[in-house]
Amino acid sequence: MSGTKTIAEELDALSAKVENRVIEWRRDFHANPELSNREFETAKKVAAHLTSLGIEVKTNVAVTGVVGLLRGGKPGKVVALRADMDALPVKEEVDLPFASKVKTTYENQEVGVMHACGHDTHTAMLMGAAEVLAGVRDQIKGSVKFIFQPAEEGAPAGEKGGAALMIEEGVLENPRPDAIFGLHVIAGMEVGTIQYRVGPTLASGDMVHIDINGTQTHGGYPWRGVDPIVVASQVVLGMQTIVSRQIDITLEPAILSFGSIHGGVRSNIIPETVSLTGTMRTFNEGMRRDLRARIVTTAEKIAESCGATACVHIEPDYDVTYNDPTLTRAMLPTLERVAGADRVLEAPKIMGSEDFSFYQKVVPGLFYLLGVTPAEDKQPAANHSPHFYVDEKALGLGVRSLVHLTIDYLNRA
Image (tube, rainbow, N blue to C red):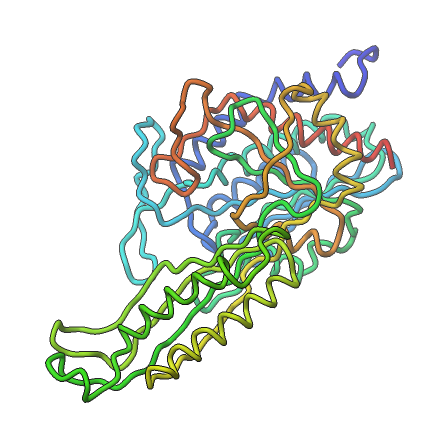
């Protein structure tokens, strides 16, 4: 690089140089997806790349995680950059030459495997960012920690994983980051755009499991038992009044949805038990506690009124993804410079959840969204859809945003 170039110009030139490789990496990961805590080959490729750049590498962190540390040429603070590596049990329906054909067993079923949430792009972009930053290491004031995380979508049953386990195993220590940045590709946002939000950005997520216990009997003699199917139906309907009638949703939005109901084996047998599972989302911890209490009361009282019992278990999955206001406002000019001020927009609150939230509870963090939908696509498939599609023109902007945020933060610090 010419000595007359600024470091910002060097970052852009190096980002442009690595862009084709980022796309190649992404296509490789997309064609060879791996489920949570099973990202063995992905992790090997990441570790090999970081090692080739002269970055200090730790592997097998939180099962398959990879952590790289790039020490700059000058003293300073520490920035962490995070990407998630896991795919989903989804059969791909997109017609691409590198579409996934992978099948595996998930919860005792044969399933397709697909990067239906774009984690392949996150991994490839962070690999690109690592190469760019390694190319200017002598000019870096401080250090950069690269966190390649498994199991963002949740660890398999009976296992631990994800951001919480990464933190438990020391990813935010030795050295401790002063700030952490992460991004997520989003369908429905035009390629070339970035969205951010100050404060609560993505919702907390709690899994709700309810067992309704009745008394089994013949379907022709329902009065001789207690029908848990009818009770479960009343519980589901009763739950809808919690958000619509009992919670002040002018403070924060909230959602309570049930995704599965299981019970019974024959048409003429009223079963003993029906199980419900659902999800609860909100942006406020006080409201979150209130919702939990109301769910328990509603289920138990409806069941009691019918002569049944309800056993409620609420399992916290993710906390609110909360963008540190001071950090977010300070880094907004960087995003606007990289993408163009008219292409950086304030995001609405998003009811999806992210375990990036766990990092933000330890160090200040900024989590932002990268548009990947072609302008002409007016009805894009959502993330987690078998038709989810990424316009790879977005990847260059993703790399540039990560490296400029890093350098600008360290220079300001």
